Length: 335
Image (cartoon, rainbow, N blue to C red; front, side, top):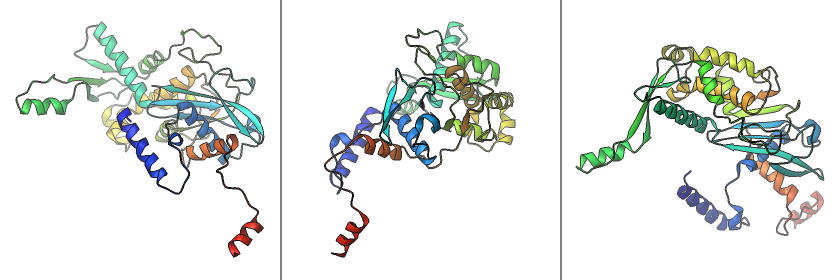
């Protein structure tokens, strides 16, 4: 949401809670950070799996790919000290330090926009702006996109005889070439940025060693695997890569016959599949041949449940109701 929309929603929620029977303060209502989103998702998933008794040994890592950002959260195996992006959790009377990192602009939608800006920049340098070729869009597809301006506003201005800047649009011609697509995507991840606290993933971001810990990937990660028809629990990145090569070389008409998806989802299928491989292998360092990641559906994942687990283990307030034994509660109910 835009800032002006976000503040309006927050104020409305604060008013509703203030008028309710719940105790609420204005600072109780806020926007979660990306790191909190990752940590609460980690708590919710590991709670559902019964892994919170010994998180150092039994917990799974969590990978979440949204439209705007991507999160990775796990407890390192070899090195229990998390030197950056540490998110402490108190469970069973012990503190564990999660590694929780959020990558803004590396969600599926925003990463596609980053790639498009990169392709436009190269076309301008090469003075080839008449034709904008896109290696990650289906072969034979032509997609027109508004880059600058507002078509509706320009049309309204023209209708009343007013002057307005003409909108700038771009028409993308899909080429469907996996190798070129993966190569262009890899350029989004700066592996040469200074790494002040090794080891780093990309853009100089610190990340502890992944080790052999199991990971659960959901949201757009699991959507891609499901659409490609791959098994959720036993899919390696090289399996997604093979499927991506197959999808990318299909032309637009054949894709329509093979998949019953919306136009937008079908347009982005080659890109999405290639991006998952490049992000997890080239970006974060997962082995292509390993089946370390389970691509499970999001199901009933509740960040609220994770937030509740964190709050009750970290905070105590005199306003919290006291727990009573069953017999005492029954006696009061009889009165």
